[in-house]
Amino acid sequence: MPEIIVVGSGIGGLVAGALLARYGKQVMVLESHGIAGGAAHSFVRQGFHFDSGPSFYCGLSADPDSVNPLRQVLALLGEKIPATAYDPLGHYHFRKPRYRFLAIEMPI
Image (cartoon, rainbow, N blue to C red; front, side, top):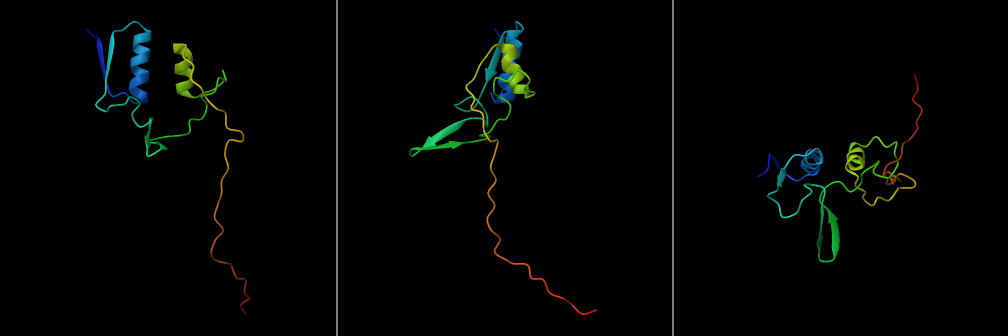
């Protein structure tokens, strides 16, 4: 019989359940969806892979100085997950504007 029931298996629910279990509580995590993870999961349709929520988590690498709260929880639990470092962190591509600025002189 669980001492604590966590409703929802998003990142928050999973973290709460894992930490409570880590400290000796009997925990049950409930989820109405068929897949745990809340918005942080993905699915495949017709051979295409889609993220249903965030697809970029910054600070999950093995860097011990990472201030990412999820990285700190994973370290406390002794869990490791594969993470790929972005190098460089990002690229931004802006479409060329369709207008031009004209400089004209106006008499005073």
